[in-house]
Every structure is written in C-alpha cells, then in structure tokens.
Length: 176
Image 1 (cartoon, one colour):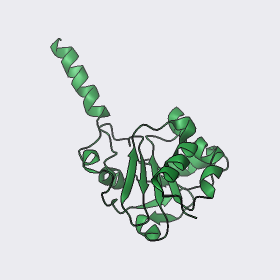
Image 2 (tube, one colour; image 1 turned 90 degrees about the horizontal axis):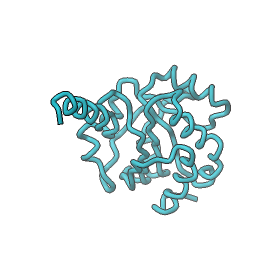
Image 3 (cartoon, helix red, strand yellow; image 1 turned 180 degrees about the vertical axis):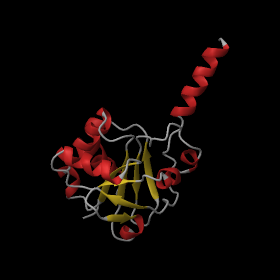
C-alpha cells in the first residue's frame, strides 16, 4: 500500500467514523437529555415524556438528500403504523431549524416534528456526530423511564416507519 493510498483510506475512515461517545452509549444506558426545536415551532425535551411514553429519535445526515428524504417520507406515508402505539417519535438532524422546517414543508403533510440540533450538542451527546459534521443514520429507542432500549445502526430508509413500529413492539415499548 502506498503512502498516498494509506492516507486516503485513513481520511475516509476518519470522516465516516462517529465520535467516541457513540461507542459509549448502549442499550440499558440512560439516554442523554435533549432539548431541540421542531419543524412545528415547538421545543421538545426528553424529560417531557419521562414516565409517560417511549420516545424514538431517528437521526439522519442531511435534509433534502435522497436517503433522508426517503426516510422522512416513510414516517409521513407509513406513519399510521406508529399512531396507535402511544409513543413520541421524531426524525432529527444537525441542520438548522429553518432548513428542517423547509424540508418538512417540501414533504407536504409531515405530521410529526423534525428536530434540529444546529449546534450539534445533542448529536455529540448521543454519539451520532460523524467526522464530517453530519449525524449518522441511527435510530434510538428510549423507554418511558429514559433508558435506551435499543440503537438501530442499520436503518432501511424506505421502510423506516414500519421497521420502527415492529421494533417498538418487539421491545415491548408500544403503549396503549
């Protein structure tokens, strides 16, 4: 392997690799508190749901890109599978509130909030911030007590909502 090839591979891995905190969070850990503004203008905090309902936060890299659009469209078009489960669910990115609000509008009738973390503090706390400054496409399942029940790091963007509903049921997080 030449020096140039090695350097290129090292840079590619550095930009693709999530921050160290990602390795630290696992099922059973207390989920980091968050406070993020949604595309609906409201601010959402994890503590708002403690003792009331499970929370799903589906992180995506960047608004207006192919995979992110497919994922958010799945939550929009197939969201009915989540409606009766009594959970709070969000998609989230490090994009600005304005960009995610425009993104939500471009998807027509998004009936769930898209959360924004423009200062990247929540993404860092959850360990999803990659070396290039974008969030990894990971979905966090948080139980009513604020514990991480699961982290999905292999999200199928076109089947995001049905997959989330199935996982919630599998984990016993689907409320009544």
